[in-house]
Picture 1 (spheres, rainbow, N blue to C red):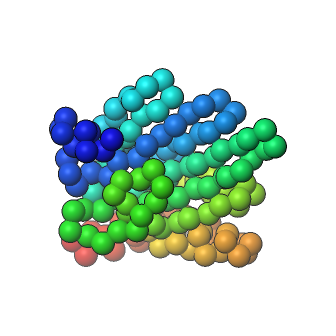
Picture 2: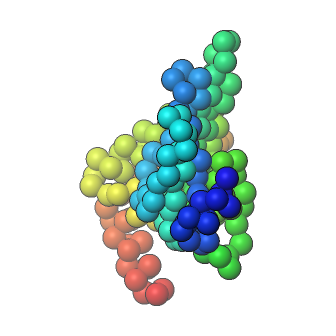
Length: 164
């Protein structure tokens, strides 16, 4: 499937994510991120792409007749063609995983943290990667985490500018 997308003009260094939506059965969606292209496969599936270096949140949820069987969020930085990467289901070829949380209560804590970041006027793809790693480490062991602040964000932006 991704070979066909590459043939119709998808750049080889873009990260592709397959999204699925079947009401009350399976929901794969992007919570945040800057999508550069989108291809609809059918009424339930589409593939979106991200440029190298962009950060996105990929939420997966699925259920069967007995209830939820998977609830997961991954925050990923898409990588360039020469960079090493980690693989994820439905993400081609992969990316640098900044956060990987499963289980609805923990996923809900991540979603709440994302909402809080947006509430102070920061676009989540611009957040310092260290913050996503911090959230991953603290939430995965059920510990409190530091709230991302404007001061921390300004420091990150200055660090990023200096390192260029």
